[in-house]
Image 1 (cartoon, rainbow, N blue to C red):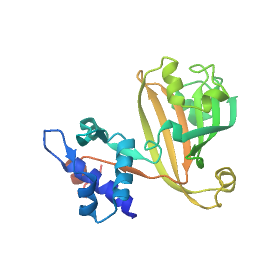
Image 2 (cartoon, rainbow, N blue to C red):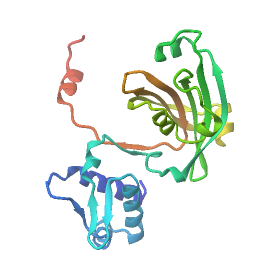
Image 3 (cartoon, rainbow, N blue to C red):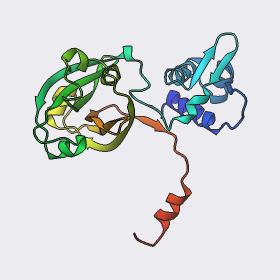
Length: 240
């Protein structure tokens, strides 16, 4: 692990280990550099990442403080959420209306003759193509979908349509990039990638988007509470 990545992960660990009630302030850059045996530049880069994902805030003349609300989110960051929107852009590959297959009918709770949007777009991060995203959305919920919309934030579009987003269900699977994906991503066929399947769910319980993302530069950090009951179940010799 590179020095910057190690410092970032270790600072995150110490932030989540902290159990005091007073506002948690990090040591100054010079002290952190001495403790980790790295340059102040490395410390600044690590702090810059923590700042970009909302874990810390800098108060001029006072110091670097931990945001208390940061510890309430199990997903600390991934390779997308650590980036600002001005560091990313989308490029539409295709946008079509089509009839759903049986799986899509089941996901969206729609009939075989109810149209859905089928969107393929590329995501660039710092001008590097990192993802292919294939998404489906019900036309009945979003009749005005256009290329301009698909090349921006779909979540913002959904909110602008008046649909309150509740949560998402996400699945991760390691894959190898096929020939067509490699051509779009500009990488070698067979390159390792993460396939991320996501269902976005509205406050009323309806699925509003089903997306499959292939990412060749994916990484993420989570914080998960220890589940003693789950451990007992997994180590039990009794079946269900």
